[in-house]
Length: 140
Image 1 (cartoon, helix red, strand yellow):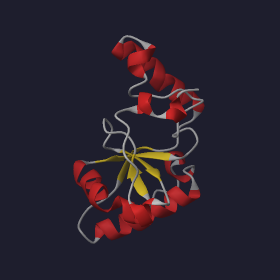
Image 2 (cartoon, helix red, strand yellow):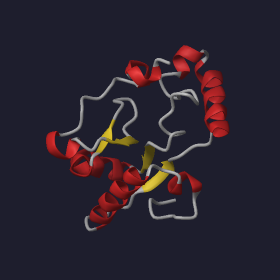
Image 3 (spheres, helix red, strand yellow):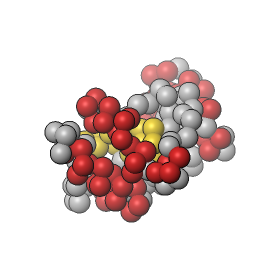
């Protein structure tokens, strides 16, 4: 799916400002031959819980899983405030141009995960956290 797929809940339930910024960036990226694919956007609480259970099973503990998957209560995906962009050419394009749209990579271990930081258009994106366990928002 792309950021323009209005019939897909993972896209249409994103925060309107985030979606607007993504669509502006995607339109400009298309001029460079780059297309934005959404691997994951908004997530239902049920789906987030499923992802967390799978991560605990895969990584062996809740502490290790927390490096990759947040709880329903803390996930910016459940709130519609985060998007995972697919394909390396798109994440590379965003790495170089995302701040111009307020789109910032938040976690060093997740080059696909972007959130809206409107102040980035003036001063650049904030310093990345190593992984979600370093993000104060995840400490609930």
